[in-house]
Length: 370
Ligand code: TTP
Ligand code: MN
Ligand code: MN
Ligand code: MN
Image (spheres, rainbow, N blue to C red):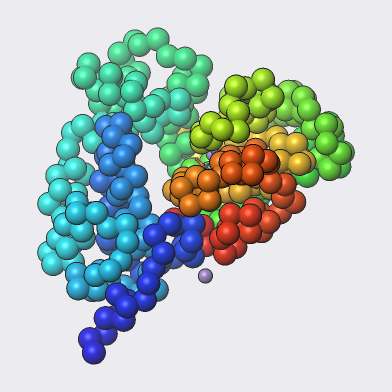
């Protein structure tokens, strides 16, 4: 028996939320290639194509060993014709022609650079690209009117594209905790997003805030933001109120990935003195850096759903919702789980209970890196 042939024999479930997907896996070369194509599809607003590449990559991330030959892929789910072609090319030649062409294309490079500006999405970037704007500097020179988020995004472009380290995340967490406890003692703060999944770096830091006495958390965000602003910790913030109750999003509607919690998208001013690190800027070095931070507030009864919804990965979340709808006739959101056959909401006091309601084995955060 050739080494690795047993891969095809082991049956791999087709939803990412049925599998353990650790951060470190055995097929980086293949998943990097597929991720480039996924990214390119997303930048071209071809969501379906993007998801197909993401699912194929996620399948490879969950395999217990390196794939060395195409024959090992037989019987595996999630690998569409296009993804298979790319995988085979990389296995045989070490590179994929399509991936190479994409990485070197002016459009892909420009779209990446422009959407890398905080506050700029694919639509806006594409409009600018068609006007001949390919870089943040081009945009600066163009004299375009930018909104507040985009102005901040351009101003702190380099720093915001520097990975946030785990120790920076911890330092931000201490500031957030001081702010929250100053305005609401007893509130609980949880690190969510990629850092909860065990990542050592991130593009931002995400926190979920709640209070055991339901109702005490209402209107918390503006108070936290005022405290942070008064202490000089914020370079930018945009707060949105909770709109869950007013929303028309009834249980029968498919849950969207955008939830309706009170939230704040912000840019923190983090001192780098402790690390003895200096940030180089156009105006010389300085001892603080800009860091993207997301804050979300949830009522205590919705906390497990919010925790599950904000831990990611994005594909893992998408797969959970797809599993719920197609396999269980349930609707899952970051607020609730609704059973459409029994026409009732299912309560949960932990993530484990939500997995159990969904008939899924519990997958810990470190294995949700799909
Ligand atoms: P992100 O912070 O975008 O991603 P991440 O933390 O997994 O990765 P990175 O290290 O690059 O920051 O989102 C975190 C999770 O929050 C993700 O699973 C999707 C979820 N989310 C929502 O549920 N609603 C939202 O409106 C947003 C922006 C994110
Ligand atoms: Mn595992
Ligand atoms: Mn994040
Ligand atoms: Mn985030």
